[in-house]
Length: 502
Image (cartoon, rainbow, N blue to C red; front, side, top):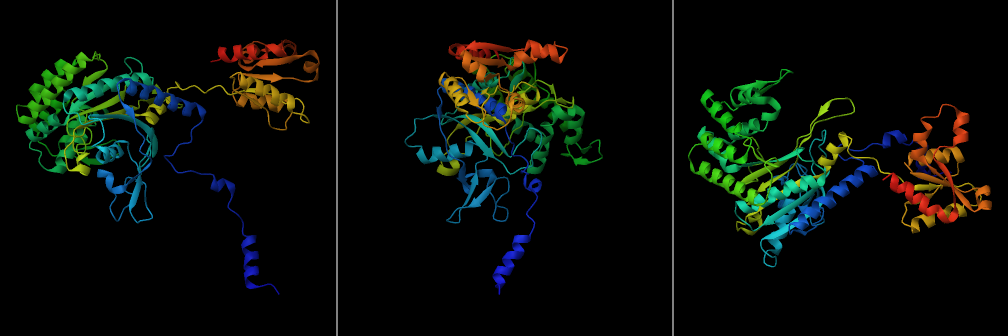
């Protein structure tokens, strides 16, 4: 007689397994990447970090996890340990979280090693970060950043250096002249405006700042509504405003729209908009010093704009703030106009390291959003699919030694190549090579072996020639893109094809 355990095992064995299609799914915000995008992101990182290195910064890698209590404003509370971050308990019951940026780990590292570091400490870092937030177009839960920071340097000249280097980094990442701008503002001027309109309550101040941040999206009238009673959108949803009176709304808008063609003209316009208080004077002096330093650094006016509407986290930044904006517009697959906008940012954060040391240590930094920038270039069609390997077709399934040998010779010559490893015939092998985006295929059958030659087919040139051929008979006779070469000339001929296709 079978035991109860054995009978239970029979029942379990008869249960239907999950359908494969139900298992093949993934969380939103964690993108799968094919080779073209991987290569584009790696190339951007290499180019941006080469700029940072040229400016004297050194590399640092701090690892993926930090203790949650080191993350500052993203510190999870006990009831919501995953609020804003992805967190788990260590074996000693301490919460640790995947890093949400590359700056908080820098602050922890600097605090631990401050006595032994050359000061100011200039470091760059690149790698993935994770945020437990709702994903959207161009916004991911896992994405790549590339940062540079100077810890221990006060003064506008350090901010100006970061701003000028940010412009060079954007150009190195692939943005052309006129396709981007680094927009600069300062917390001190924002404070002066808030104080000037009597905004003392934190909720009112945040509402005003959020309204300013939407100037590009809603325009003057929309922001005026948000500064006043509120705004109703096209769907009928109502957003409560800051409740400012008409005079205060006018004053805030005069500040937000004080941007001019040149940095000097903007400073002059701001002087008339922010008043004469201490924060106003300090903020104007800060921008003036940055303007002088940018001129000394040779930074073009088109690269860096002073923009009073730029608002970044005031609980984080203590002085100048800057944002890298991609200006170009493009069309997506559906023909809709797409403008990615912000692809990087930074500013001065003099309080971050003090969280660990108790000592105020000045710091400034900038981050390029590599994933966001790559997404923008991908939408605009500027990221090309890479060529695949040269494929050596297997003409003798019982003895693939010739194909393996030829592929080895090509690789030894520095050419990316593979021997076909499937069991299909000629037509499927050619289809495989097309799907791999192979620049060429190599065929060696009995005839080629007897003659000491190889047959090489330039797939892209063959496709171009075939477009002008009207009949199958003509195609078979012409064999477009196909040539025969002595075995000793194989590498040279293949190299010509690969280099011609880029």
